[in-house]
Length: 589
Image 1 (tube, rainbow, N blue to C red):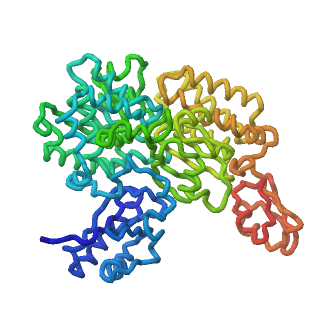
Image 2 (image 1 turned 90 degrees about the vertical axis):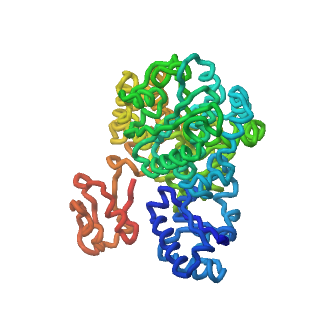
Image 3 (image 1 turned 60 degrees about the vertical axis):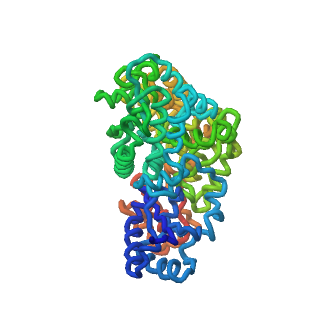
């Protein structure tokens, strides 16, 4: 019998795959086979390790060595030195062991527990880490009411946005009258910069299927649907493989584990409409209709998919279910804050050194996430703000780095938890322009069904566009506030109700930037092109003519070894002269 003495885990998440991690795995396999070590060393593709900034990542067990930015060309030295000679390859290390890496020190991985640990395409790997044990425990020793009681007692809130109590949602669906009920997994992750759900489905698809089956048992459903955007081909592929494997093992389908409970899961591909992340829009889409919301009540728990009682949770919510069943409600409720229980997964992106996926206990300081885990702002720039909650969230300024990351605290700042996007901005970002960017996104993604969202958000975008071009007035700021509040109150669904958040939060925290754009006709961050002005500082100019020769218009006059001048009427504000000047004689303001 062959005995595997070493495992080499290669990150197989989308981020690392795009950086050739599949080729890294193939190269390692070739090297191992060339040395006749295939019976001793196993190379496995896993899910996302989270440390996306340093991918592709290779982790070696049992040595607990963590290699970063590995290329296919590194396979020869990794096998030759580490596998054969037992020597760690220092140049590929980030830290001596994963526990030495600051990125992981303050994390607590529950939803992400198996990502980067198992092969997501092998059900045997999932079973080896207690996979489907929770389902077995539920079917053999718990009533549906007991299951709901455990989830309620844990305090788990929905991780897709507002944090509605998961156990209560299940209870309402269970109590609703109906001969047919459904469970839906909302995997329509559309926030810019968010990749939490995708990574879980790519790295641990069986955990979602097992949790959906448990939910089905608890609410009385025999059918589940995973609504996932078609832009996630790797997640879709691995999820379908997981479904096929679970059915083959008798863990999905009829009479699961010999019980009277039957449950099947199907996949429904979305076409990328952001509004379909809203539960009623999602159900309309599944039914073949337009992705438009409907008025609530009735809520999906009473009248959902095909007008039947339906329980909808997002991917991360389901990822917490099995650990709660196995470890108990008190264990989970002991993590986090009084009102926000457990952990939360965030996608760190933007101007941050450690771009990646992190999972931390609720209540952690924002500053600890940005600096201790995220490694601070890139290029030594000053931290300016962080956008949480995606287009539906708000911008939190540097003065609030001490706030606690939980549902209540974020709401008080004018932002929200959302699904977990966290985009970091630095001194070079214009907050007026940022607000315009997010509003443009929601305007494009609005289904157009209700007037406040369709017309109101477009009107706000027009005002912001005018301000960033130097044509705004102070009256515009009051109009933005009024419009924002009306849209929040009157819009039909969550998309419209939260769309003004980026505008209202930046108006509150960065009012001086709006004033600078309107009163001084100046963008303090230098990001709004129409408000930029490039001038040559006479005392610094050496007349080298490099700026004039680089200018594409041209709009720079002056003779060699004499002070040059920028003709403002001709300047297209491309900034090439600013970048090319060898003596920093060109000023941008």
